[in-house]
Length: 70
Image: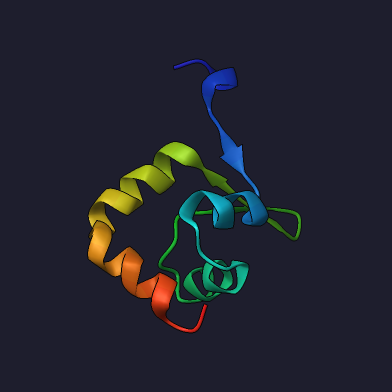
C-alpha cells in the first residue's frame, strides 16, 4: 500500500461515514473505544482501521449506537 492510498477522515466525515452523530464519535473517543489519532487538537481516522473496527463491533452494536441518544 502506498501512502497516498491511505484515506483519512475528520470527525465530521467519520460521522457521515458511520451515519452517527458527531457527539457519538467524541463519546467513543473519550471511552477509548474508537481507533483514531490526533493532529494537534484535531482527531483523524484511518478508513481501514475504522472498517476493521466496524467488523469487530458487529452491525448490532453500531445500530445500538445510532439509536442511543445520538
